Length: 321
Length: 72
Image (cartoon, rainbow over all chains, first blue to last red; front, side, top):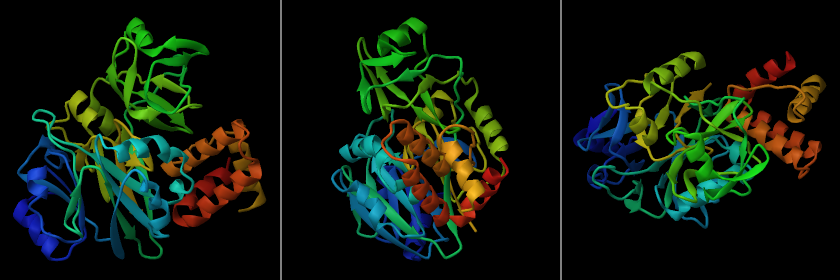
């Protein structure tokens, strides 16, 4: 729910367990309490997509039996798999552009045990018009960071489970060429297209590929996107890494993002998300300002975490049982 | 896990039959195991042990998948 500063402070002072997303100017005014937060002024609310620096998006974590909050840098971020509750949910917020974000993006898919522990989160950001600093907050200690991730460990009552899922509006055309990479990287020069070594920048130019469309990889029927950040004469950089031994294709063009979201949400059936976030690239490229995507409301983020870092995806968590 | 389901999961991991779950983590797990088996970095016994641990940890979530796999 989008609420004002006073209402948020009241919830904190009542001892509620909260997940908060807002502009830095608001987050820095919050008192200590049972909360974590991250910066973004973009949201998908019940009123539709919007930018606001007057209100905060607050999720009450009323399903938690107990919580703990810790901050992690690039050297210890994967301690999250050891320090989480056995039956719980880990909520992770990581600052955009930080080394811990890069480390998480590149290594999370190979971390043993990560899939055993439901992990949802997002990359904090800033107003793209004015610029700013991506920051995360540990409300329990009254600390904020630009170089550390904060994790809230949520213990769930016996008989309850967290399920992390996503809504992805992109898919591939199986007749398109398969693209593969030699390494796990955020920036590449060459790739392998249908077995041939080619320069990816040149390939994109020659094929006239719209770089607003991500690369998609089929993980046993779940499509994982990798969005293109920049194409120069020789290199292509990404918002999330590409991985070796994964087969990619460029996504099929999507005309109306909001309509496609609604279509995919209908296909997925009824869900009651306890938390969700959507990508800034969907907000920008899909003109989601003013668009409603019920029942999914939450921050618009610079990357989404559903176990591993995702791009251009709506991620959500349900509490089952 | 009963023998029939176990055999079907092995077939899924070898890519002989296809099963897509509504659970993202399960799909990621299948994909990860398939990749490892293809690269010969682990054997099927190790994969099945991880699979069983995964499915046993979240019985509420796994119940639907196990029923669906049994019906394949």
